[in-house]
Length: 511
Image (cartoon, rainbow, N blue to C red):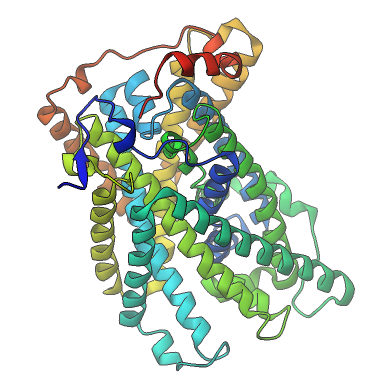
């Protein structure tokens, strides 16, 4: 225990032993936020589901657009809330402080559940892509039987998860440097092949290509509530992850401003990339080929555009993206559980900080062990593609819930300043509220349309209720009886950039 310390609930750890402050600048934080969304991984695992969803089809770009706006409104809410309270607990902390501590804990649980579920599926997907790259039709070093062996996929997934866990536990600087490399690879590769697709379709009109239709971008092309909800929940999964920037706010410079900026910048970049890539794939492959190829659609897309070994770049990009997003999902999970332990509402072991690395390394390892168990259990399911599809839909609903709660919390937290200006009313009140309500509606619609498929979501939410009660009963420091606050000073919202330096000079940053 000489190498670590337990952060006492409510206490501010000494700077040398807290999280490593000032380590990330705006570019670093934006890179992590963008990599967290993992475009190559999202396109590989999700686009075929969007295209195949009832009432969506080739209106997949419209589904991406429809889901972008409410999630961007939530990113705005994160930005304003982070300005007032840069806490690595992010959504959990803000909701607990401004709405209700019990609801805050519950949403923290939902986010942790999302992270664990994802860190089970992402390494498995990365392993399957990696083995496929070594198999027939690619490098050809292993047989198809070996490449699709579920036990070997699980073993490879476990190894990848262990490697990523080591990087996250070892330090935020190592993690950020790795993210720069991985995000550069996947973005360049996706853009390269998307541009090649447009050139090929418009110059040679290959068999199976469809050309470009502007109706793909029309939200009214989504057929009814079923198409809207089904496409939007998958679209929410597309954009999930930018909020990692908020969970790293205690480790960055200008921690009141940069996390919010990074989240919104990454959202705009991602929207452009997703629309370009999805449109490029649809123009070349059409609906039938995308749905028939399933999770292999992105790799197949590359093979239609370039011969080996150039086409192998896409598989490498997907593998890189899968590793990057696994890493950046472990990050917020460890910081969130650390914040909850620091508040005395989560097991104290999650508050242990390594003396040299200044990371919540024990909590990171515990999450790794839970995910490893999940990988083992998931492998017992013979149909891995179905497992991926179910997990993605489940995660989308859970993300919609905790994002939605944060949007509504923002409007409520700033209720006393909303009427002081039109800007406040629209940007801090109306838009986050619309985003939050819409995301809750998406979650409800998906659950109502298929309760059987939503059982994991219902179990997760159901478990959260008694766990919240237990946390409240064992807590002794008054966290659950604290009075909530409402932000009253408009300067804290509108002029924080002007007064931020003075505030930080007068009071220590919260760590």
